[in-house]
Image (cartoon, helix red, strand yellow):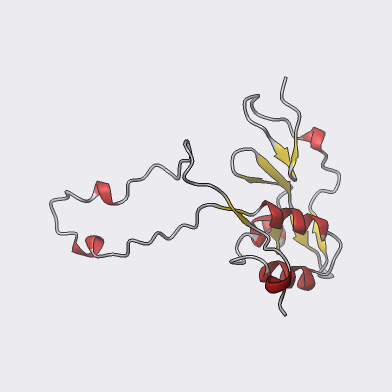
Length: 155
């Protein structure tokens, strides 16, 4: 049995049909529909979108944070088996020195501490001294979170 058959996936589907959910500002086809030139290849193109919407990877990020200090190969193989594609892993985990970030923002107000793989192939936190008090919310209207834990409102 593989991980995907025995354990829950590390992502969840969210409701994207609710009121107020915006997916960008483009009306891709509506801008070229009445163009003067012939756009047959645009008309006959696929109607299936390229963006994957409606997936929340917070469980993946929390899983990666619990695996700090573990062997990267084992962590990656388990995480990759439990998600739909490997890209979201590398939103949080840096493999090279220039990719390291102390804080990673996912969405408007969800923050996660950055991770990296060290020379001995161990998953580490970029700045282990970073605390929740170091992150000051930019506004009082949103609920800001650090690693899934709500942060107190700005004064």
